[in-house]
Length: 114
Image (tube, rainbow, N blue to C red):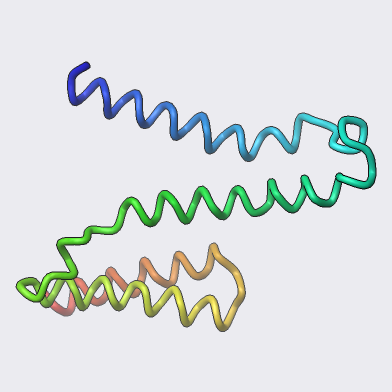
């Protein structure tokens, strides 16, 4: 398989996996399927699965070459993004807002350090 075919296949698999983790809880009736006792456990698992997928996608998108001492502007931008995420999470306890603040912090730091 060519590199482009592998990339397209990977994107399709990731998209389907992400969609299914969000769609499955909407289409199945957990109470009828598992009973009341296990319902909370399954709901908690599916809730955490969404956050785990987002974290995995985020972790694979990190540019490790930015952590080299040869590229201080990239390192400063990356650390600004992480700091923005951390502070926003402490303040708002909302992962969506935390990611947006982290992106904004990264963007502003990359404009300043150019």
